[in-house]
Length: 542
Image (cartoon, rainbow, N blue to C red; front, top):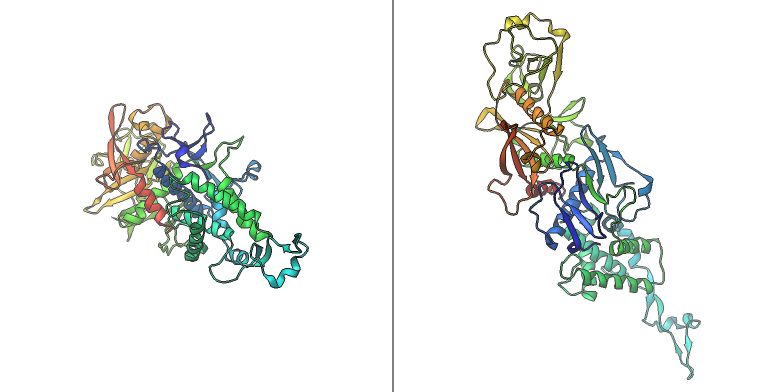
């Protein structure tokens, strides 16, 4: 296991697809912990803070993989050069996803931890407890069986230094190997805050009992693998204990080696760089995970306010009547050609039919590729038709509308209706991450779009950057579709941020209004409380 006090922190990067996780430093033999965007104020050299963040991120990556590995969202990635890695692999633990904007590669497992968690097996533990071992105790009734091992002294006395005797098969009694293993497992469960496989949760009291046996025999009460003051000393004692146990264990079968190798990898293993790739534990393409974290936060805390969400996250206590049993905990309740979304029914009724529009129907832009008729404005906005979409006629060369203005009442609809629209209409359904209602005004909504970028991406923008311009255009398009029927009270880019202390609004705070060429876009940059959102995300596993 690595020493958290020796890990260098990497906090800032201009790369919006920057690797998040632990790797070897390219300039030294030290480890470096690449933190998510927004962690500029994370404390340096704080063993406890770094350790806690590591285990939270470990659980975050693990949950993200577990939630998505059985969906068509990801593809298993099995490069040959990873097959023999001792610490982190892509064979069974790595997944990859290619989207239109970012390639995601998730390195979710560290073998030194996974082997400890995976090695726990009641049958194996019980089997080792009952195995014979070398003992300094002498059973005189069996002494005739050991005459060939005896040392004959001058006075006709024989000396036998050890016998192979069975351990008493009574409850809670085990070999030192099992006690050592349970001590390490107990320490890990504590750091993972109980976020472990169900078989370990079910037998955790037994694990703690055996762990205490080892601690009583080898350690003081204040020693711990993950304590900044006792880390090195404790790991040294564990290594010495493992060596002594191995030397004095006479019979070693598959059960023994399963436990022994898990302990050995934990104590002696480390994350090693691969010559080809260089990413060891973490994720490249954190933005898609950030989206799942944010969606989980809003669905757990503010589901009653959600009108629309471009997501299909899993919630353990959620029951979705629109899905099959294997997917009943996923929030997506409407299937589209690009995947599942969450939608609610709006308060806008169909003009010609009974019923109300769903929010995905309101989020529609209709483009007309025909040149506009003389006298008709270049950008036309109207209320939704009974077909279930909002009409907007746009010239091929579009002039950006003033989205905060209400639709004009001076448009000549007679001229517009003279056009043959059947051949030129082009429908697009914008997909904002989240639309929240205003509980005090049903005709006002808030648009929230999650962005995983450093804050300086907006404070010192590169106006020629494609992503900067595209993000603004998308957000304004969302507003255009919504403003056919509702007012947009707030429009946010929701970026991650580490707060040293809890902000006045637990969500976070607005940093500044986003400007483009000196003009306010109507979009605010919101610094979201990463710790709160991550805690809500991880609580789903407990």
